[in-house]
Amino acid sequence: MKYVCPLCKSALQLQQMTWSCDKNHRFDCAKEGYVNLLPVQKKRSKDPGDNKEMMFARREFLNKGHYQGLSDRVNELAHQYCPDAKLGLDIGCGEGYYSHRLSERLPNMTLQGLDISKSALKYASKRYKDISFCVASAFEMPFEPEQFDLLLRIYAPSLDEELRRVCKPGSILITASAGQNHHFTLKQMIYDDPKHHITQSSHIEGFELLHRENLELQLVLSDEADISHFLNMTPYSWKLTDEQKADLVKTGLSCELDFKIEIFSAI
Image (cartoon, rainbow, N blue to C red; front, side, top):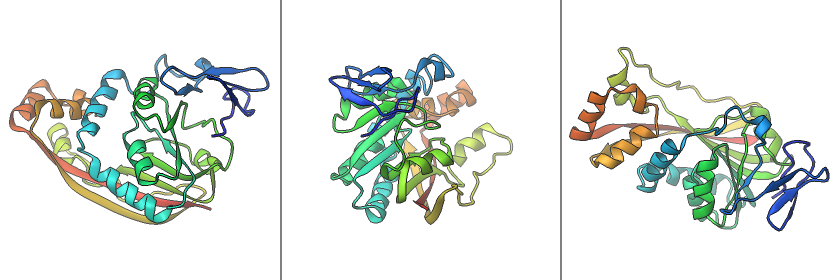
């Protein structure tokens, strides 16, 4: 992995547990193994990214396998479109759930995870020792140009030009976002006039769209802890009333899962 200094953009070298550049900017690896490449002066808040409560809820929810269908399909497509990838990047990797499962599907690929949340990467690094993780912004990624063969972006914001900068020509980008009917039953509980998500295919500058599909599943939760974790990892936690949340815990939660999955090739 070739990191660049987030302050001066020169190459970083690893000595023992510290990454440093020729200008002696230094970034120590945490005891869990990740490196923090998001300098204080580039943070928009003291602890950017999802808070610990959202991180814990998402971790517990994903670990129960409720979104495994999405992970399985993404991994199938990665193997289909980029089976010989040597270096991959999971943008907005969070607690490492999708990263880990992708690395198992493509065992010959070295995988890098990036997220702005230090809390998430503490957990990811501690659990998934075979994957490198760094705290950094997807809008200014600390990598040299044209490194990656495969990029994964699941529900993560980014800049088109940064995506194109860090990947090789012809490399594959897989994205997953909300499809038309995603969670629509819950939206009907919240809004008088709920809107469907945008159905059009995405345009990413510097990439050609190769494939687009919608993965439609049904989420059915009956366990109180699972329902609580699902709500707390989403904006629904503060958009639903306490009475509505209590009703969901009592009666169970069932809603649509609709994932828009797109495959791009770097031009």
